[in-house]
Length: 111
Image (tube, rainbow, N blue to C red; front, side, top):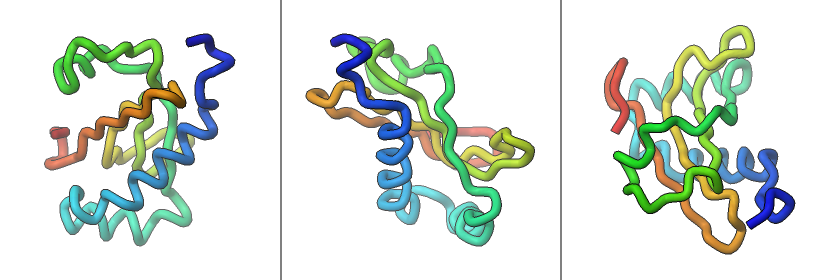
């Protein structure tokens, strides 16, 4: 698949917000969910970052990371996410939809 056939990063971010809205209540600890909801308007955000090399250990070695984007969602300070609630690996291939989420479960750990 060529880059021109890939989903745009803007579309990937829209998908990430939709997935987060649907799944956060079932996956975030109550205090983190309340924190995000209370501060979303002023500080909520998502950023596309370089795909981390640890994804194969979470999703399997057969995922083509070059066809994916990593999105981190949380609360932002000065243009940087200070508090990350979820990392998402989202396929940019419109014909091969795929998403894997790693949720914050403790101050330093994702599952």
